[in-house]
Length: 265
Ligand SMILES: Nc1ncnc2c1ncn2[C@@H]1O[C@H](COP(=O)(O)OP(=O)(O)OP(=O)(O)O)[C@@H](O)[C@H]1O
Ligand SMILES: [Mg+2]
Image (cartoon, rainbow, N blue to C red):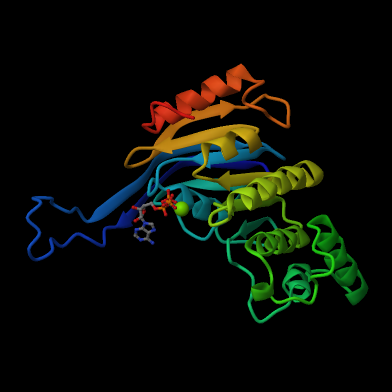
């Protein structure tokens, strides 16, 4: 379960800047449409963890929203387990959003939201307790989000997503805004979660190292409209250490170069 096919997806938005502003002397002419994605063809295998990179504004979130069914493509279509995606479905998919906890609910109540489909109270309680243990939030069940650190909030969001037990996990920049160490720990958490649950996981990130350390495969989008510039399998053992894996380090340098950075530290 969780086999995704992205079939010739193109996306154009109506251009909100089609009117030239008064005093705009740039000479730009604005067209009616803003082409964002151009004929994207991708396939994500059942249980694969794929990291998607690309410059800001290139259309990564747009692609995720189309895969999740929150947005329709201008042309092309997406299937998950051979079913065409027409609308969002919590049965198949869950988008893990940053700052997505409901502030008026405790950690327990937030995670419980993900268990609404379970038939009885006993199984809901067991499920919530299990998720809290997985993300190591025991003792914080009755705290409100504002009483948690940023990293703990992300872990609670992860627990809620896991409680829904979707076939596909979609994460749009799950580590943004976290300090360095919390980022590293959360990254480890997501890798562990993936190896534990075996769910197809798509992660959009700006961080090349995140993608190379986490992914079974890395995809780089670029251009306007965006196309797939790189689709590369990462057949390296985990945990991954750039020092010990010269091939991975070489790929890292290449990707930095593709993104316009000639010297990567
Ligand atoms: N609802 C919308 N209406 C019009 N234009 C949009 C809409 N959503 C996104 N865009 C435009 O589409 C382009 C791609 O946006 P998108 O959010 O997918 O980029 P992104 O790669 O996720 O960027 P970032 O890395 O900064 O999050 C941008 O130019 C954006 O302005
Ligand atoms: Mg985005």
